[in-house]
Amino acid sequence: LSINVATSSLSSLARLPWGSSVSTSSENNVNPTTSAQTLQLYEFEACPFCRRVREAMTELDLSAEVYPCPKGSLRHRDVVKKIGGKEQFPLLVDASNGVTMYESGDIVKYLFRQYGEGNSPSFGLLESTILTGWVPTLLRAGRGMTLWNKAGVVPEDKLELFSFENNTYARIVREALCELEVPYILQNVGEGSSKMDLLQKISGSKQVPYLIDPNTGFQSGDHKKILSYLFQQYSTSG
Image (cartoon, rainbow, N blue to C red; front, top):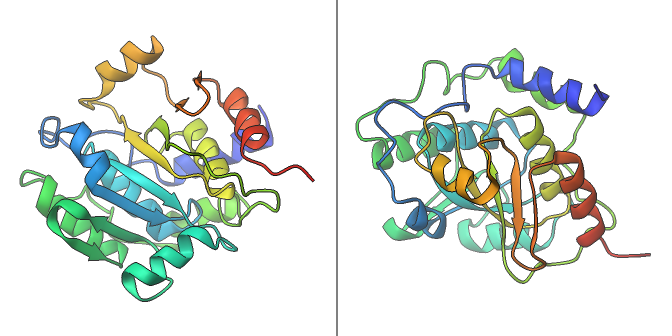
């Protein structure tokens, strides 16, 4: 068991109740094809407030376009300033409803109100303690926080990642996408997800992470292969 996987597993344990399965009765609440186009999330993986929003999206079975904004990022952080007026994360844009908002607590409440069919966030999701808030970030020693110095290759089409928030291996892949500032469509497939059949059909399994890169045809469910592919494909040489 590598250190990378071990610390990611501990981070998962610290967030155990959240971001693993779909809230009851939200299975059919959103058409997965529309939600990815209308919800845009500007965030970075290591931020505990961003994580809270991603957990809510897993519970609500929502897909979204994710624009990683690691520290040092110019591309997406500039966009955030243009859209919302300040460089603060997370920032949610719900294009279908003309909504733009900061503040993770407000975003979570909005998502449940808009897409939750009367469900409330799972107990404790909106509270942040030292243990549940910063420990997972500290355990990962800043992975998914800062732009990698050789990042810079911009994909023409967005990659697609099947993931659920509190998955050890999916976290490692999301961290890499963040450090490389590569935007992607996040297909949340927590336990009970309506997109599980789609994942099974595409990959032959229900395991996450599963990454598809339409730019090259690369597809894999092996987190190690995904990592080496991403850093090779989306790094500048030299």
